[in-house]
Length: 366
Image (cartoon, one colour):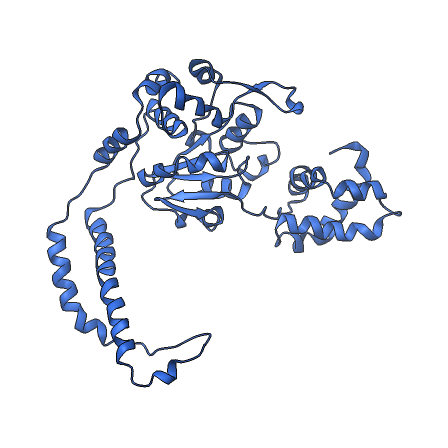
């Protein structure tokens, strides 16, 4: 916290002490505005107009989020409000908002082998296909939210978390935030230790692949950096269609990771597929039945105009009539079931994604 606005943050801390029970139920961005509203009447008595204006800047919000609240947590045990969940998740080929993961990791595909956290949303999109091969892709704008870290830390299966990040100070910080204790969250026990695997760009990778560097922001004194996007040069150099995906797969293979969903009991797998098969099989029949019903309705006037809802009686009599045919169809399909092992899926992934030239360059990277 800047010493110039020491009086401002003293007042903010007092406000938090008085209202922390209310604030902890809100989102952090909302609390930021609620505190700002309380600061207005204090201009000229407890704070200056300059203090108030500085609180309204991006740096003012960052100080509240990154310095003041962690300090209040550590000193007083106050729970910090949640930051609004940004970013996205690719899970079993489907795109979901990051808030889906924040509802609990039971929302994630149970056959997911692990998670890949990507520093940038745009790069995560390039890895979407991997989510069908057992690796759930999580993307956030920069540092992973602490609630997401908490959920991943407490996840029952303790699946590995791979981190794909830039070659710069922030990239290293993102990896450390997931794997190790940080100054701001050391009291929350969020570090996942050995579960976290570094897939990020490193000095060795940058040198081996001869990736172009760019200067870091002034706060890092312009030190050379390489974004994940810098891998795009490999498209022309090596003829790789999706360099980010190829690099990620090559790095995973160099670390001995399996690219496949985890296996489940064959009976459970058959039941899942059967439910999907029978449901899809009925879809076309249901659509045709609805059209026939509409054609045969005698009182057409009843269905003219508009309405908010239309309620029908539950027709449980349909199920017994359909049941014998569904069972007959299901038995025929069950006999034809073909199971695929994770080794076979892994081989399929290699045929689909592997770039031998890139793997050869990276295979000695530890």
